[in-house]
Image (tube, rainbow, N blue to C red; front, side, top):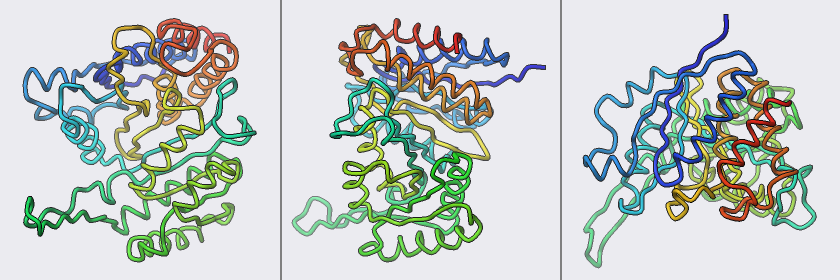
Length: 355
């Protein structure tokens, strides 16, 4: 009896619906080939809905999404909506309320993609950043005192719990073991300055490491990580870090793998529903022009399948994307690919069936 998965689809804003369409095209091709079923339910959460109704997420939306096997997201961000409203009201709310405490970000340079780093190729850039996704400075703890006066004070606090830190670190060790490459896990922090938060991170890291004798451990300050991402990215296998530092280094990671057009990731709750998305924004200026690069959204679909247990199909999507980047694409940039959005999705779907 074939497996069946119920997927919540949030196409979102700008070019989000266009890239999601191509991702679904590839998902349908690979699922038909492998013999499992995918059922989709669309949700119109995003800027257009907010402008019409004043509602970011309707009552009951989070509970409704809990019933799905996964969430597939296109993009959030609308030019007519003040920045922060949709991002906090949809992205952060879903991450926090669905307890998606892991942000999983592969950083991999594919064949045929120009790397901005001198003398670095696909053999040098293949790492994964595991970012704690529900604590840290993003909890919104803090506030203002005497706001708008010369004596104004603004406080933003980083909240780190032993439970939150340890479950993220433990996930990273398990992931590093499953990845089975260098089997090296690096803790990224700032122990010389953030002596409270990263004292907790460092102690938890070393305590959990005792249970994983097959994993080599390492530590690096976040500023050193940014230098070494540029100078020696091949040093890294899996990196685990907090919410803020993870946010920063994954954007640098996207650049060394070729840009936002290929970067994808997942917001993971290992015990619940997880959400998968391209990392780039909604790119509203390209909306409706059939020129946006859909590969990041397609890669996100592959990561989603791997998370659902369809590892072979997820890897086949990645192989098909690599074939496109290696043989067919002129550039990752919108309008410069040498292919339209639709043609790119068609090619990936075609290659998936041929693998």
